[in-house]
Image (cartoon, one colour):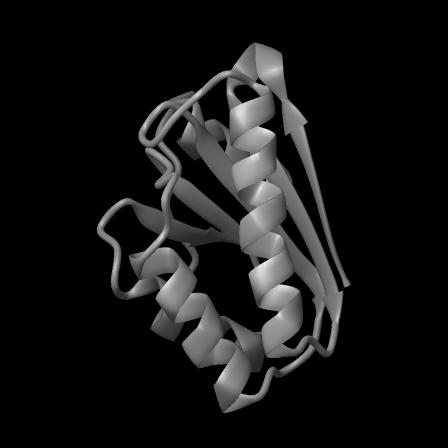
Length: 127
């Protein structure tokens, strides 16, 4: 399941992901993200995105490929993309997806991710 919300005051799109996803979930995520950006009156490069994947499990290669495609080829690209990820195995999948972008990082907490997204102090990414 993926739930997309936004915070207009911070030009932030938030995605909460949980469970085992399929390619259709990834397509819905991209559509919901684009709708959130449009609803805020923003365009490509005008917003940041926080994806909380704490509730996700290891995903199929089809889903990994679908997310990689969305990260690479989206109508509304974010300025920065932060992912919150705890589990080591799923962190490897996340790192693989994000390797196609220079402005994407993985964090252990929402607080660390937000600090990086909004340039509050020096935050390091999770290895």
